[in-house]
Length: 174
Image 1 (tube, rainbow, N blue to C red):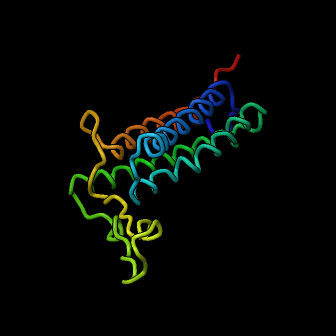
Image 2 (cartoon, helix red, strand yellow; image 1 turned 180 degrees about the vertical axis):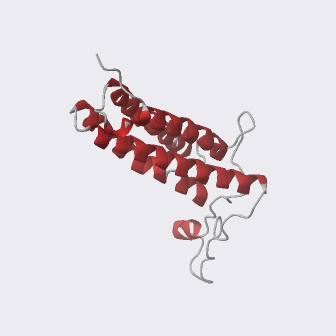
Image 3 (cartoon, rainbow, N blue to C red; image 1 turned 135 degrees about the vertical axis):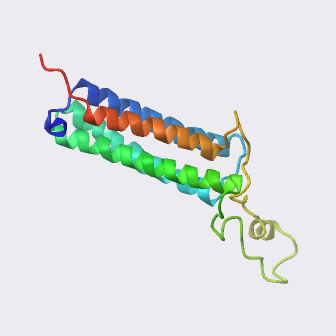
């Protein structure tokens, strides 16, 4: 069985590629938020969770492969990373469907409670209380026809394929 084979160079390079790929993907999202000024909606923030979990998991897979731990450990971590990316693809696909109007999004997306009447004179705290986050059904922008959520699907599927391929690849024996 492939999973019980010792991890080799393929798994080491796969873990490295996934660590860098996941970090670059979530880093790009954070860059668009903090540098580009794109405010994420609730579904945008949820799509980052697989990356926040996946990057440290792939660092563990990288360490496992580098330390030559049993192949089952490294390959299991790579499979877990692939599963996280499948979850990320689902989240991105769901959000894309909400943006295209194919189905309804969460009812609490973009909704905030109004501040209590007479709570202030229009100061900075009132402006914080009246901030309305973006709605989940409006794409912040599109590039080549896809929104950020759509591009997350593409990135997640590619990363999942890399993870599963690396986990299930049989190493050459010399």
